[in-house]
Length: 110
Length: 113
Image 1 (cartoon, each protein chain N blue to C red):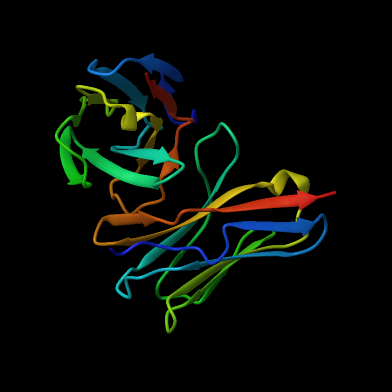
Image 2: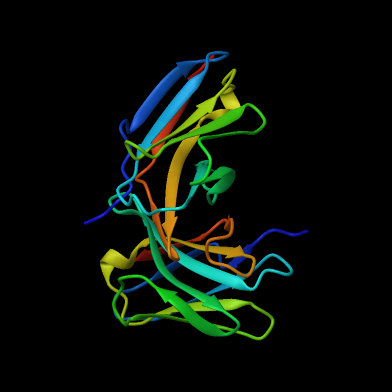
């Protein structure tokens, strides 16, 4: 079936380094994408979103890149901090059909 | 604004029982969605309510149902519980459109014994 997938289930980075979390989506018609962060014992927390008419969007320490040609979404976290350790989900939406990826666990080493 | 709240936070039931979970959306939000999260399946969409009507529905059996009240608060019910229903049930609210940014609650951890 059509599912949003993640290239890497786990990612370990050194504190201060930049992190890149990748996501492949399957529906070329999806027009809205979101990245969520989920810490242990908590619900997903909105990080940043992007609509399909954009290629890049920046937030505070985070950047989302959208490559519609290869149906790829990435989340870049600058100067990764221990508090960034969590599971990160991507989600795609088309016509009110929201699909979530399995998640990537980011671990930040001090 | 207060965030999305869910009650109870933890619940233990036995097979065959039924359960009702509650969600209060962010003030002003009219769309409430429910999700099931398990280690094996990840986050899966159950259904979405808007103005007391189910507007979108995922691929879950009829044992899973919900409703929304005039104040946008929502409840989710699972009847005839099965072991496989053990999961974290998350509620999310958004503005008028399902595709708007969804803000999640902390979830209800349901364990079925």
